[in-house]
Image 1 (cartoon, rainbow, N blue to C red):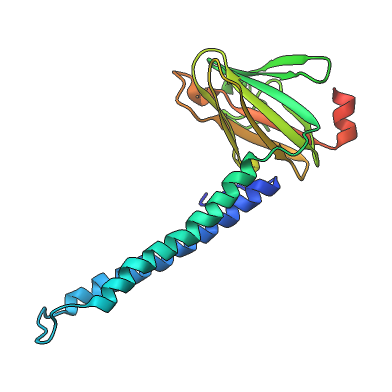
Image 2: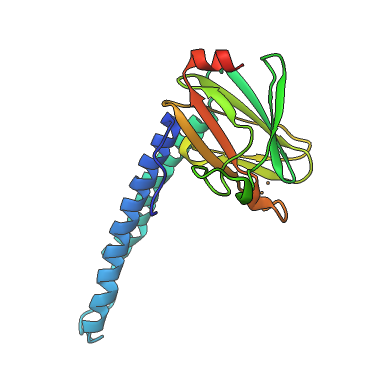
Length: 218
Ligand code: CUA
């Protein structure tokens, strides 16, 4: 499949808009440069009056700088949006291990559990191979959620494409991010730091449910 997953959070929506924006600029530049390079084939390299071209050199120096600004400014805007923490109502702590994740709901009775990938030979027929876990994270939708990420052994990365979340779990450090899930469903993710032999086998599953279901679950 080409492209990004459907977004499940406002920040991921913004990331997709930015991706499309950058891609559009990229296409325009590629077409222009491609056209210029193609036209070189028909150049006879002779021009009796050509000695210098101050104007064109001014244009092709300044124009790329302006184009880069059109990418840099929205990029910075997004960067600061992603870093913003807006009064989270739930905090989840995820700890990376070789090779599984463990989770702690520190503000709800300190619930904690491990989350292992379900091996292919134990997978149910409707399960996703290499992607399903034995214990899912349950989180309320339409709420601001804070994630604290760390690791117990080597560097891991807690990554969920549909939510626009990607945070490294580093031993001895506590990283923070936040997101807002705007629909119910299952959201899958994987570790994205090369963390050893079973790096590919420590997926993440979030079950996004209405708030009252979450209260019941907790
Ligand atoms: Cu943990 Cu890769």
